[in-house]
Amino acid sequence: MQKVIVEPPLVLDRDSTEPLTIQITGQLRTAVSGNRLHAGERLPSSRALAAALGVSRTVVTNAYLQLFAEGWLEGKHGSGTYVAEGAASRGRPGPDVSGGPVSSGRLGGRP
Image (tube, rainbow, N blue to C red):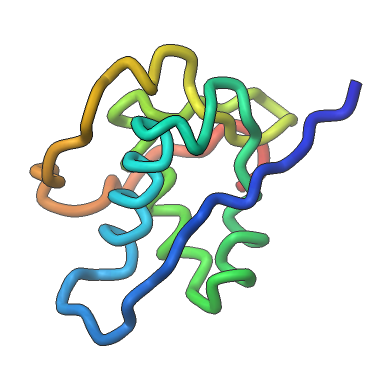
């Protein structure tokens, strides 16, 4: 059975002082906690999402890496990036207190 790739509902404000990576990270957390994205749903590759949003792939990769580190997303080797089981039960996401995106590590599958 082929998995359907979900286009997350993201709207970026390029005039905001908030960096694009932080906007994406926060909106994906909100989409998961608000049940607009569900456990097991596959997200677009970082390349595809970056192209759809008109941003650098690095922006999307850093957002995905941050969400991996926090347990919101999981990678399946050779398959892609998915919403993690139990991620929605985290409740409402708080502010990003990480000090910025994670800068090392590797996404599961090809980002």
